[in-house]
Figure (cartoon, rainbow, N blue to C red):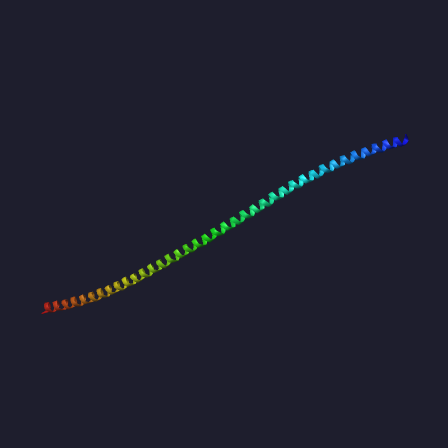
Length: 141
């Protein structure tokens, strides 16, 4: 009878141990499932962040390429503007040189005309002087 009681007691302990083990196993399974779920969430977040970073990097590269192309276009455009301005400066310098040459020619003509006028005036004055001398001689005679 004592053996039967010990056996029942051992069976009861065994059932409790089995029950506790089963509960512990279930608890551990839930923790593993939760850990897997968290791990899956973190992996999904990580993949999203990696994808976002790749997209950010791709957008950055596209922006760099666009800005580089715009800079090259501006450089070419600036070159054209500078060439146009240099051509305009050359044209204005040539016009200035032509105008200066024309002014010099006009100055030379004006000087020659003044010399001719001076000579003609001197000749006229000499002729008048001769006429006056002749008129005085005529009056004196």
